[in-house]
Image (cartoon, rainbow, N blue to C red; front, side, top):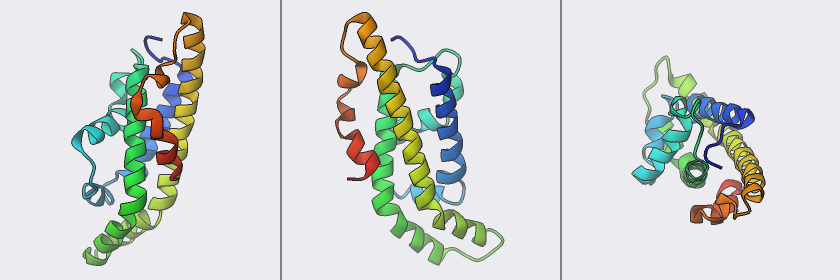
Length: 162
């Protein structure tokens, strides 16, 4: 499989992107996100999936790149799930009051459920890609790409949180 051009996969990536930008990495939460201990290459991979979609929409996505981007998002979810609630509480307690205070507090209090939606979307994307990958591997009589990407060995644990 050279590139993924499946319309349902592209729509799902668009939904992931919109949800991430509106509910995870919005102007109220981004300062707290930047305090997470996540390396630059992981942030770059997350950005490719959630913000740079227009580069790939028409030419398609490389399957191995999509897997790496999902793995980076899964690492983010794992770190955010365990560390962000405390960071958000301290940020909200020290934030000045003003017209944005209520919106900031709403964003912080809804972060857990929004992260769960993001996680569910990532999982759906991963499952869809694995299915496409298996079909393509059978056609070319080779191994699926997901079996060749080492970063995916812990994907289930990172996404599900176990």
